[in-house]
Length: 115
Ligand SMILES: [Zn+2]
Image (cartoon, rainbow, N blue to C red):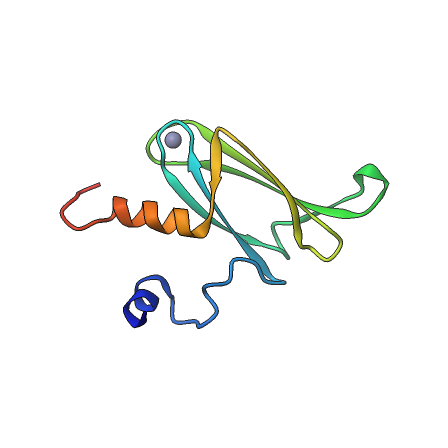
């Protein structure tokens, strides 16, 4: 487990958490070429207040362009008033869990393969 932490951690003991009150990590994959994306959504800067549907909520919009193809992966996130993620949508790609992302990322970065 110590080695595992060294590989994926950045020195902080809290890196295993994907959502905090300050940020959220989103893992996704391009539907066309399979390129992996990991995005850190900053709840202070990336999230915009929205007054649709009569109530106050928060939304974030991301457009991801990978290096392998020209498809734009579009991500829309919706948060409640406490800025907890309540809904997410993706176009031209699919969401991954952190485990799926790390597994796929490790496979891509396996020694002996030059990507
Ligand atoms: Zn792509």
